[in-house]
Amino acid sequence: MSLERPVSPNPYLFLPTVPTFTVTSTDVTDGQPLKLEQVNAHGDTSPQLAWSGAPEGTQSYVVTCFDPDAPIPSGFWHWSVVDIPADVTELATGAGANDASLPGGFHVRNDGGGLNFMGAAPPQADQVHRYYFVVHAVSEKTLGIDAHTSPAVVGFKLAFCTLGRAIVMGTYQW
Image 1 (cartoon, one colour):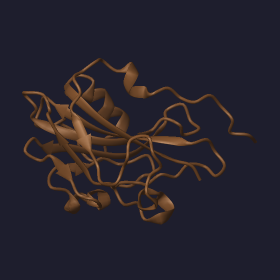
Image 2 (cartoon, rainbow, N blue to C red):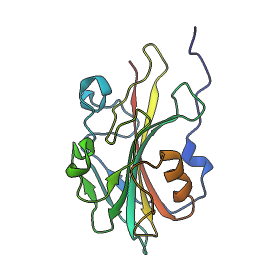
Image 3 (cartoon, rainbow, N blue to C red):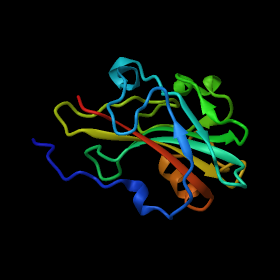
């Protein structure tokens, strides 16, 4: 069976337009391959992310990692951290290990079933996969959800309260 298929578009181009702000990382270089530590088979270590310039009125943040290139129509959510307090502007390398590693907020179950960051895990010999690390500036202090909420519902709620978005995208191919 072949996995050949068209490359999925950038999913963030199909969302309502919001202002952008800055996200940087010592672990992810935009458009470049991820470090092995960010790969599922090599440790599931979440990257360092720092952000600045969020829009006025930001009450909290949500950080996500999404792979639109998974061989399924819905893509694959590798990471969702919600309700990060507005005064937090950085997640350290490895903060995605569990809720205790976070400076606030909590994990929502990833598509692999865990309450943590799940590293890149594309099928062997598949096309290059893109991993969108996104910081969402949110107009509410809380999304009003719990850890059992799906990442799809997180995305739906974000459609109504995202003030701004900062994106850095890494790649990986097995």
